[in-house]
Image 1 (tube, rainbow, N blue to C red):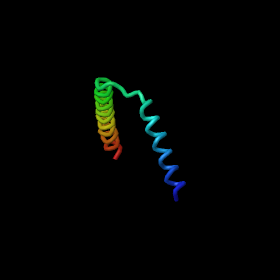
Image 2 (tube, helix red, strand yellow; image 1 turned 120 degrees about the vertical axis):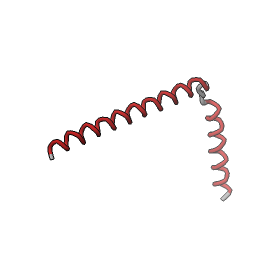
Image 3 (cartoon, rainbow, N blue to C red; image 1 turned 90 degrees about the vertical axis):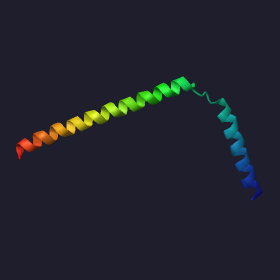
Image 4 (spheres, rainbow, N blue to C red; image 1 turned 90 degrees about the horizontal axis):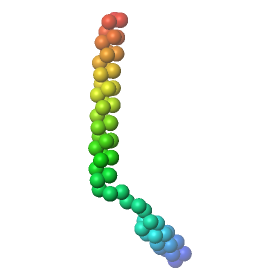
Length: 63
């Protein structure tokens, strides 16, 4: 049991050490990339919706 506790402590010490090595982006970069993702998702959503309307219209002509 004691060996398991020591292994867990060692693991979290390693996590803490690696966590300090992480290079965090600046707030401005995070905001700009978040806005970019939201815009891209919106554009693709509209594109798929328009394609859906187009195909629905084309299929209604076949019936």
